[in-house]
View 1: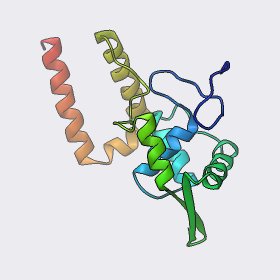
View 2: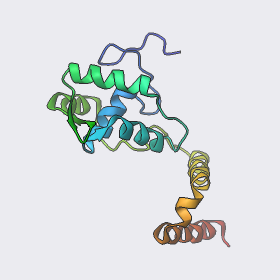
View 3: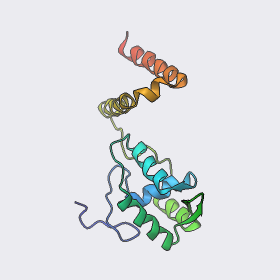
Length: 155
């Protein structure tokens, strides 16, 4: 599946549309601040709009390896282990290109691609409709988007 392509840590990676493997996701997520392993998995799930959640068996061994390699560090408090980025991890992000990350795994290069992305987000919102409906701020934003779409359609 991954062919012979290897990333900066020597592990196979998949290069497509800005995606450079779970290690890169972990570094980018920790660039936003300290997180537990469960927080990291939940963030990955949110970033994929619920389409993918890595298993603990995929994430925790990588966290241990990345800590051993000096990219991240862990601290324990409240009976939880929290991970944070070390300088070596920041340097790796800079080397890989630490520009805006969220959403970069989906390129939008045409009107059709943009419509597909909007459809994906709408499906995500439909799957989480109770949470959306419970927030007046979300509802107001969606009403504005509805008006914007209607103006595009000429309604």
